[in-house]
Amino acid sequence: MKKSSIILSICIVFFACNQTEKKSDTVMKNETTLHADAETSIEFKETHVDFGTITQGEVVVHRYIFTNTGTENLKINRVEAACGCTASQYTTEVVTPGNAGMVEVKFDSNNRSGTQSKTVSVYANTIPARTVLSFTAEIKNP
Image (cartoon, rainbow, N blue to C red; front, side, top):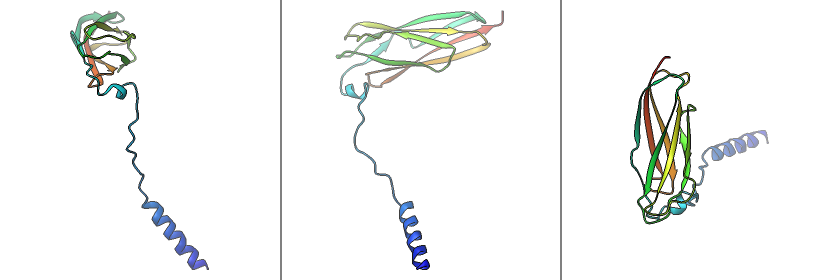
């Protein structure tokens, strides 16, 4: 009895360890994938800005202007800064084909020094779904 229980336990462990997770073929729909077949594209006038030399503690702001160059409505889903020193605002309304919108970036140089390179990711119903904006600044001590 004891021997058969051990053999049964070993078999259960063996088969449990060999189980593989079934992969689903279901595509999760979100705001970006819902419009993946749409011909929507975003074009920024510029994707990089150099703020030049600024004094530590100074706050600088830049508006990146974009145009919906596609044939469908464009919607920015979110904007994510790579650093807590950077804040953003953006056009939240739908941008129709041929019209423009903006992403405003505010960089706070407090407690920063030297050359700073930062990025902001813009997620929209475009292909590709992510556009990266960047800026640099040289921070001098006061």
